Image 1 (cartoon, helix red, strand yellow):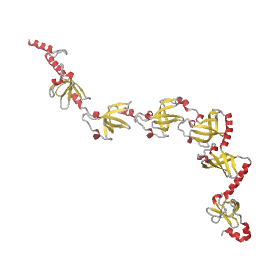
Image 2 (tube, one colour):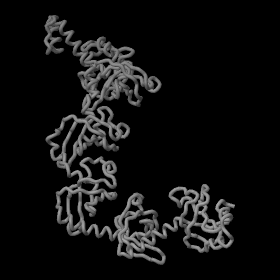
Image 3 (spheres, one colour):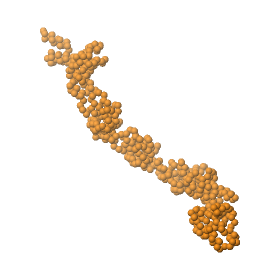
Image 4 (cartoon, helix red, strand yellow):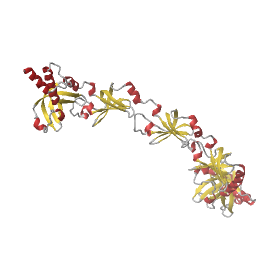
Length: 558
């Protein structure tokens, strides 16, 4: 038995107790006194020995014993020996009565907040009363947008069902009235080019809606900033107030276009006065693509560095592997197109060309250190310095003509001494050689068999264009058809046989091509002249003939 029941037992007669017990009717409002509180409920005596319980969350603060509160009996049936009571229901009934009185006085505008989404609208709470906002009456409220639930709106009451206690609201009617009044004021007060104050009210994919004294105007994304890389979320938020420039006013369709960037001068108007091709500038990377990077050199001025203008050495560059947004780069302006609002930039031209720098320090003919970078069927690619590679062709590996298995003889990373043979700065190509580090064996051949020297050899092969003569174990020379004889030879194979011993004179030794040109005809002519010179006592002219020689001999015989 509770303390309250004990008190009633001690102080009241049976007649008084019976008279004090209230009639229990569902929906009836009675006054109760708090007798105890636990973690979930407050227990109230509502007369006699009748008790009920109220959820604690219906109180603004935890009630204390002895406090009196008006409560509503939610059911006439007992639950666990007690009646279920509600304090909140009493408050709601009182607020509804106040609302009825307020509406009866001709009022129709309320301020409320969305508290729940419904398939066909939303529930709105205002002054402790709830109403329904149909989608078609939402006006400027985007029910699907969670941000709409964080602020208060003004609504117009358009229908009340007193029996069902239902209220239908409209935001659209309020907005339409505000817009009508605002448009009348704006259209008479402002014109294109004027600067107005406004408040950001909502966002769309294509732009931002700004309220000007209650009338919404559009700020397109393209009119936010002269800078292309600016994101709207970084400069505007719902509720922000600011100044905007009126770009256009469509009086017929009641549309207003606003701009922020037009509040400042277009930087492209003076671009040719600030910058010229060849100027070195710093820029901040705004966008990285597969074909290059965009860098902003000042607010609203953005240039493109194509992938081909990033590196002197690397012809194929992936910009996404080298740069990221907000990186600062140095570049040279290569072209300015004011009409198309386009600037071309070059990062590599802002730096010393490492290829040219290397060749300035290591000219053609220099012997340098290198490392094998990769092996190809036609030669070795060797690295001379950072990102500077050169080709050692198979023909420049060794003076020996024998075919070399590159993969077995060389490995990537091997250190090699090479000689720079040629360089093309425009194409950025360098050719190197290894065999050129030593003297060519054919230099010795040239010294051994100088031009105009007489040689003897053996025919080693016969072709349609001449005869090859072996001079020693390693050297073979060619006697061309035109150099075989002073007389026309119809059939080379009939005139010469392999193994025949022949005499010839050296015409030329080509060290690079490893070739010796010989002449049998020249040997015969040279021998005749030498013989004639002996006979004539050394005064033979260059035009002396065999007839002259015979005549001279006959004269001596007589």
